[in-house]
Image (cartoon, rainbow, N blue to C red):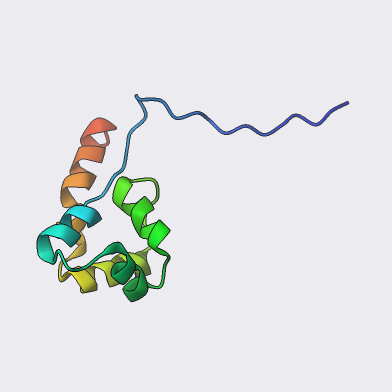
Length: 93
């Protein structure tokens, strides 16, 4: 008897997306801060910064803190609109 393969659920257009505004803040606050510099300041790879910026991944608390420090912003400023949209889209009360 074969072991069933584990499959990942396929993402659909109806699934909630959880993008963030790191790219927008990075470009608005200081256009000179490139992904590579942000990666060096946070201790993650440039590829991870890219994933954060397109919403493929969400940074952990420490990385979020370091991003906020580098961009001279707060967690609330960085995530407020995203969190509100997520709550509304998912009918969370």
